Amino acid sequence: MHKKESGAIMRTFYPDYEFNNLIAPIVCNEEYQKTKKITHHGMTRYDHMVRVAYYSYKITKFCHLNYKATTRGAVLHDFFLEDYSDKKAKILVNHPKIALANSLKYFELNDLEQDIIKTHMFPCGKTLPRYLESWIVNIVDDFACFFERSYVIKESMSVGFSMIVLLFLVFVKRW
Image 1 (cartoon, rainbow, N blue to C red):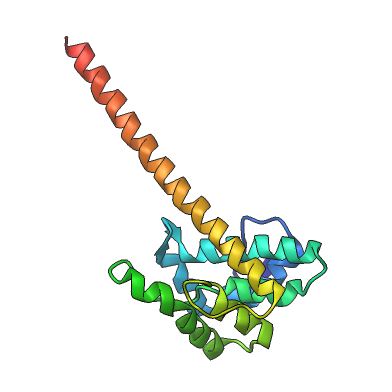
Image 2: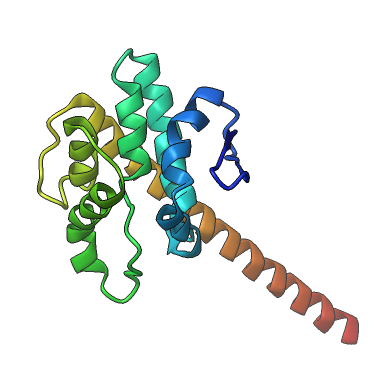
């Protein structure tokens, strides 16, 4: 947990004090908070970015890499406010540039953090990652996307199946 300037407390699902303190200055930013209202892979863009940051943090810390910069870059990798549901292909390729420009408006970033943001969509984004940490975020982001989309599909199927069972029971009861 970390206190915001306004006195409110920032919380994440992840019970790691160091992780939460690393991301707090970013996730407490007023502009960043807007990502909580944008759908991304069937959840909020905020939750997606924090998930990618957390697992990237755990892996890079375990591997004795630059986990602090990795965490900051990962939590900013999709920091853009545009909804891309109607223009998927174009934004798929271009959003790393948009996220980097947006991140630089609000935060000072080192070379590693910038590389993480601009290369996290490789090979779709066509910019080859220069650092091992960038590759890790790229792979974690892919796994997170797969998990998030699978979860949404599973939940949709569960609701659909429940409706079919309910309709079947209503039908049987009327017979």
